Image 1: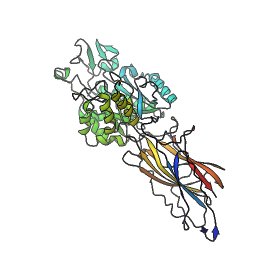
Image 2: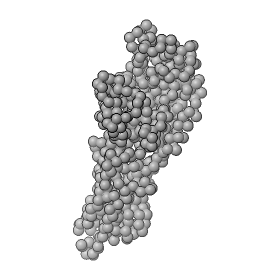
Image 3: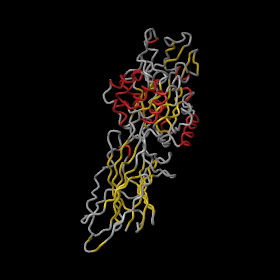
Image 4: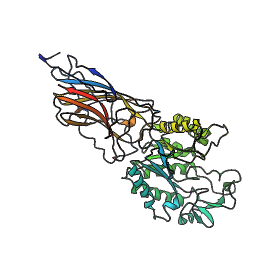
Length: 517
């Protein structure tokens, strides 16, 4: 093979380490690699903004790798990683699959989960104005961090059947000093024990809304630089904080005879906006029940707002499906922020459909990322239920893998071109920042961070990435093992579990070997 009047032999040895590999020998006329676009140094993750996905920062395919210069010595290899059977087992990664729900252990026993979620009554988080129980939240963050996971929470202003505090003889979920100025409506819940009264603040009063803003801002500021605190439910309106007032708004309920009203659209939007302002670098999710709030979530791009529905498995998500369908764009929120759910206690509808079988279908239909570890009245017991419950947890969220990785190594210019194709076998993308790293290990050890943003890999939109990088250490002649590792930019979780074979103890995936002449 001639190169400008001199001969060079290029030998490429490929190992099978979980990959099928194809050799591509360099052609005779090869032109120069234009690699000026990429920064060959380590990626500066800085304080990661969990919500601000900049989809335009990586231009997959804009690197002009051109034909190589006729005088350089190059080796090119293409690796085809072997995909894991999606039914073989779970891929334990943060913010996908099963999460610890209100302290409930993973189900079934032994199932791995990293993340946790809590929701507390307002009075539990803030017993009195400015007196915030930070230890309550800190303990959850410490536990999540120790597991290598993330944490999210909600603040509830009303908790039918679960209030832990009494104000003027009524069950109350807000601090007494707030109840005293928020013109409370004290009433029973229709269909519930009429002797049990609840404090319903005037949701539209400035006294209530201003105090809510203070609380959210305090929590957001306190945990702004803690990436383990990853998501926040848009708080705080409605029964159980779910952005509805059922059953208090049913016929014969307290709103029939009171001058107070459920929240206005303007104030529902105000609550979404104050949550977004308080948590600019977190992910948010909002319950779908209030149309104006959901519409504002669609309109809010920074931080992105996803969905929360607390009744997966029930017919129509117990009203969630129709609420989502009624707001244009709501069904696409999963593309930028997670859809987080919990199981219904049982199917509240009339179809007779099995909770778990229907829930598994809803995971796929709605691109659900995270599933609770509890809340179902009875655990799955039949063969169909057990299979559906397992499948729902396996399918939820992201399952990323490269289908091909092509390396072109130019020993003369010390440039490495990496062309890769990525797919998502799950139902949703990842919403966290990850750093893919190509590792070459042989006579020299080189780690090359790639600039691609894996948050762009969608179930219906693969990602093609083409980058050319400077080797950080001199690549000399010899045999190199190529591997791929995907690091957590926030340094909380282990390297990402990919849907391919070949993972080794450090979290990397062996691709094969390259012999540099």
